[in-house]
Length: 209
Ligand code: PRP
Image 1 (tube, rainbow, N blue to C red):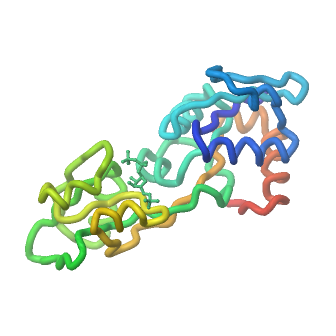
Image 2 (tube, rainbow, N blue to C red):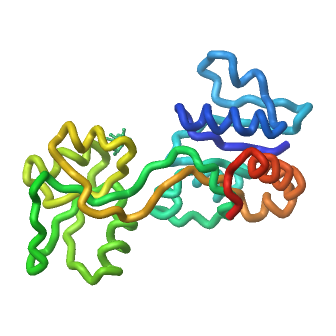
């Protein structure tokens, strides 16, 4: 049985459709229910829905053999997993944004609000910029409006949230997309199934890493 952790939500549904097309169907997953685990013994697959930010934890600890996680989560938490494949979906970018017209004063410590403290620290360290990190759990856009921070570092997809809050991107940190990841030990034991899957996904237009 190949255990697959899917990120709950719209992205996960897209991912399941890709896996289904690749020959790893599990029809019961399409039935509307609150169930979280679905298996198809014929195809040798078991899927489970988990919170997107938890996929890498299941895979790193071997509760799942493979899973799909955003590059943002992989960069932020650096889980000890193989990153096999860029699925080329769930595309967005990690960016620094500020209130329209904001001017950075390089002599002052920059106050940055973010959920992604490691990505942010690494980004500013590489530029030799002194910052004060303010860790928040969501609705980051409010921080500069209320004067809690000078800028934010956050995910930007359509840009609508920034626009509607009078903010704008000032720098892009890194482009983000969904990645297929594998548990390191599981990859050895189940390499045939996993390689069949990645080959089928690649034939369908993704990118091999
Ligand atoms: C994410 C991100 C932005 C928004 C960007 O938030 O933190 O707020 O999406 O998308 P857009 O560019 O298409 O507007 P999410 O919905 O995950 O909620 P959060 O406030 O909990 O971070």
